[in-house]
Image: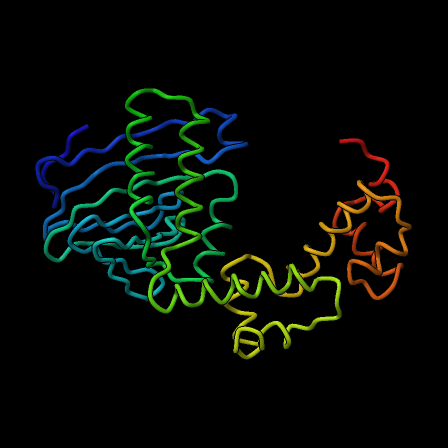
Length: 276
């Protein structure tokens, strides 16, 4: 529906969406979405509206105040709002925005992770705006809930990844270099200090940015690489469990079995007997 007044100019539209019980159990789903042309009178104050809100700024600026902290998003940036808690957002001049309230599939847990890694203001590429535009279009066309959820998931992935530029691009290059080193040296006794040294960083700083970029600590990433290589060897070779443990960098067969079972739920021998 088209909206005019209360701080919104001509051309502003919003759409409500009611999800099925299946979507509420299994999917991400929008609650409301729209495109707003805001003026200096635009001001939203809410105690609660159960959802996570993404506001992508196409031009101008929008300011958010939540938990006593103020964030202003300009063109190419977005705001994340935990609408389960009190919040206010407003425009002091003008802004053109795309926005979506959504929920489902641990949305608040995702918000908490992103908020802890970044802030409630994130610079993103154009894909974020495209995702919201597609959600609006899908709702207008009565498209499948699965298609809508898929677009929401793409939006979430885009936000999680952010937009690397400048120093961030350098960090991305260093993270990639570290991953190459881990993948080529997984069978050796390497430490986080050694990996960090390869990219000329302190271990603590490297661990922080590596976790932000990959979702893994450096140690957990190394462990995942070793386990994946072990799975390949279990399926394509007749090597003993002991030899595979040694060739994938584990310091003992018992440690290998412990970590393998902890990650997969089954022993290496049972995994070997699975047919793919």
